[in-house]
Image 1 (tube, rainbow over the protein chains, first blue to last red):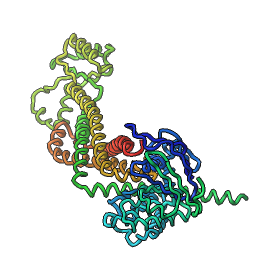
Image 2: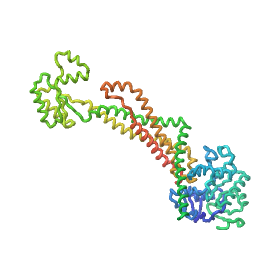
Image 3: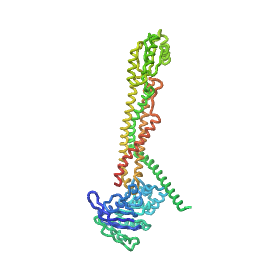
Image 4: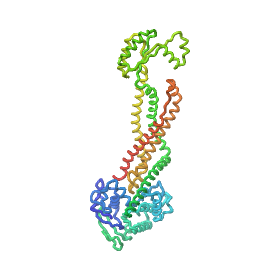
Length: 230
Length: 321
């Protein structure tokens, strides 16, 4: 599903964020990406979202070299990928419902079909009753769940999450992770960056560890199905 | 028959229809949402519209002035008639000599003779002062030739005047509508000024809308960044701003039209009086339907273009490099 092939990323100014990173991730796999702050986790996700250019190597998603996509194809690639941000990136000028509906609007969904999907996604994250509220009035955990609903509403094949539990207390963090596992069980490939080692080791999924831009560890947990490839 | 292909084709057709519907409803939503946003910030909106309106008012006003002057110049375009007044005591003999000389000149296109009797009748008819003439012992109006030169240029006129000065019995030569020629010059000057102003102020409108759009984009940076990551196309992200530019232009044009109507209302009375003094056929002309349509279309187009230029620059800066 996702293949990193000798990928290096150097930011203007010389900082080398990723050094020759290679790994494979299967369809339907759930993978954690960990490492200290500045190890390159966010950069790796940004390369996957095509919000940063890479300097070397290639990234294949579904067999296609995504950094070779023509500019007019990039939006359609991005629609197949759901993204959850640490700071959730919600828009406070509109309701919870409209926030979650945004990817469907962008993708040109019929309004009735969109309404059905938005409600299903909100129901999944347990916020159906709050669809009319402004996300600003909700708690941090609820805001993050709206962000997740928005990321999955378009039924993406891949879900990327950058420190999705970074601002949450351990119990809320565990709830969010449980939610991710549910999406994974219906076949969504997940790549989740998190520095919360105690949480992610408990979950027993594959863990990629970055250190100073290098992939230093790739631990599989064979007890889980779908985590055997590499 | 090939059923699977047919159902597949039908599904594709349905998907296509859904997409077109969604695209159309997105346009409608953008159009309405931008108006809602304009109304939500009435002061800022009004100020922008006023600036655009004033910028467009100036050329519109000059255009109206030009078309009012044009009433005089259009009607008598390229006619530089000469009226040759003959001496009051001229003999029939001299008249036919002059007629012959003019008939034989290649400078003369057409020739019309007005006898002093006919001149008196015409005067009585136009002025309504026939009684005054009747009360005079003698008809004071001279006979005249109205000469239409073959060409309206100054050289022809000068040669004709020289020819006429050499003929005996010619009392006075009057180049008709000389003042109209000057008026035509002024009118051309105004036309040229309008054109220049239209170009300059078109740029002004582009800058005004461009700058307003830039501010709007800056206010919606977060939204644009999020939409970009969710796979919004450039044209999708640009659409609300293009509508905003279109509305700015259109409503700005309407503001200009309203201002112009107000000014015409104020000017109507004195201008009509002035124009009527030249004859009943002269009236104060407004912008007219076509002029108004051109103003609105032009301003809407400029607003859209200003937004377009601004959007493509700023969206590129905000989204992926």
